[in-house]
Image (cartoon, rainbow, N blue to C red; front, top):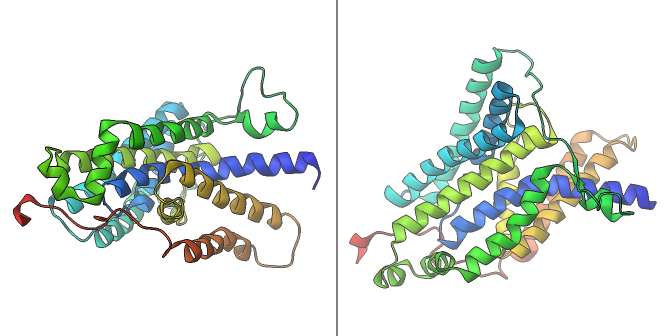
Length: 309
C-alpha cells in the first residue's frame, strides 16, 4: 500500500468511526449514571431520519443535524421515563424502543416520500479543508479534509473527558453510577442527574445517526444504522467507560469498516455480505477479550427509588 492509499484508508477510518464515536460518547454519560443504553440503536435511527428530513425541508444540513439531535433526544426521553421514572428493566426498555424506532422511521419514510418511492437525495455535508493545514503532506488529507462533524466529534472527546472527571456534574454522575443512595444522602438529585445524562446521550446519539444519513450519505433507508447503535454501546464497554478509550475503540471499528469497503472493490469472488460482517465480527472478538476484565459502574442496570430505603 503506497502513501496515497494509506492516507485514503486513514481518512475513511475517521469518517467511518465518527458516528460510532458520537453515539458512544453519548452512551458513556448514561453508563456513568448506571443506565444501560441499549436504545442507542433506535436513537441513532431516528436521528438519521430526522437529519434527512430536516435537510430535505430546509436544504441546510446543519438544520438537519440539529433536527437529528432533537429526534435522538425525543427517543432518549422515552428511555429515561422507562428506566428512571417507571423503573422498568433497562435492557427490555431499550430493545422495545429499538423495535419501535424501526417501525416509526419506516412509517415516516413512506409518509414523507411516498409508499415505495425512492428516497430523494438531500443536501449533505461536504468536506471542509482547514486553511493552512489541509495541504500538509499525508496528514492534510487524513485529518484536515473532513466534513465538519468529524471535527466536532474529535473536539467532543476531550470535552467529555473534562466534564466527567473535572466538573461537579461529572463527579455527581460517577457517584450515582457507583452508589446512588450514598449520592442522594449527600444532597445530589439522582433523578435530575440521570435525566440530564439521558438527554445528553440522546442529543449525541441523534447527531451520530444524522452523520450516517447526511454525512456519509444523502438519503435515508430503512434500518440505515445496521446495528451501529449496538456497536456504539459495545464501544463504551471496550473503552472502559473513558472517552479516550472510547475514541480508540471507535477508530478500531472505523478501520474495520473502511477495510471491508476496500476489500469489496478488489474483485474477490466472495458475496459482499461477508465483507459487511467484518466490523461486527471484530466487535465480538474484542468484546470477548475485554468483558470480564473490566469493572462497570456498580449501579449499572439497577433502578433507583427513594422508597427503597
